[in-house]
Length: 170
Image (tube, rainbow, N blue to C red; front, side, top):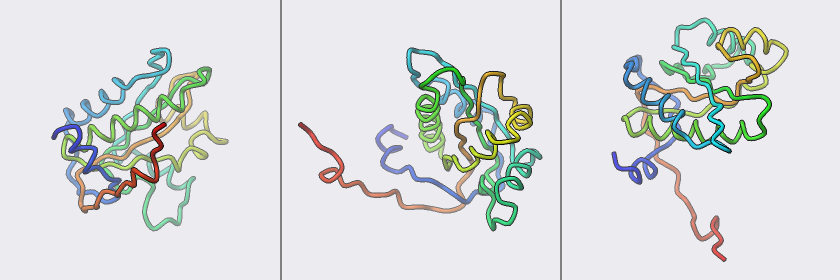
């Protein structure tokens, strides 16, 4: 898919089939995140790939909202957790850039995805040390953002933009 077609047709997908991702798809999406630009070329982003049946998904859901009708990762077959250095002031921005690359890469591969931020208080909260171990987050790093990816089981119309309202050219 051409780059501007990917941009034009991307949307956040919240329903997935049971079809697993291939190792190549997982590699391509993670690599897209790692190829993202970072402030001062720090390249501090680390990615943990967690499959749907990993017990950490259920644990996060329980700590986040055990009574939710839908789990936080929307039953996607894979969730990519991004962590970054605690001592670098641009880590949140860098993680955001990386996760957007991953979102666009998923779309280019014909997959659906949704960027997830709702778990931050849980994963970086009072059980941070436990979650750091479960998510293989390196020492001196913290969880920043995640993205759930899978084969879409729904279609969603991409949102429209209002260039004249939202862009000022001086």
